[in-house]
Length: 171
Image (cartoon, helix red, strand yellow):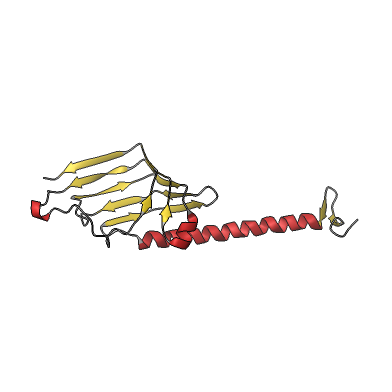
């Protein structure tokens, strides 16, 4: 018997060898790496969200869950308030049960500072929008300054589930 296969400690029901202890240490190490990575990704995502806040669009959320194994993010109870600063002639507020984002490229988030996703699910949006009076012809904006919307998002699928959005005309 070599030293790795000798029982380290014997109980009535099982033998624990050095090999078993190495496997347990490896599993604990992997758990610590996953925990550390999860905290780092959550922090990096919150920094990214704050740095890409669009002027006139405010949002809050109750919790942010990240699953880096399947590449998903879930915001619980997010709320978005839109002010008419972008020249879209709308303002309003929309609350969601959750927003789920799938197939997120976390390496791009950590090292390149942008997010590529395949699918976003907007779950149970409920809110209102107020359409503002149209601007005079010479004041109409059809573009948004690049310094106010510095977000690049590549998206393949957008799902909106059980929506209830009311649009009011304030003419």
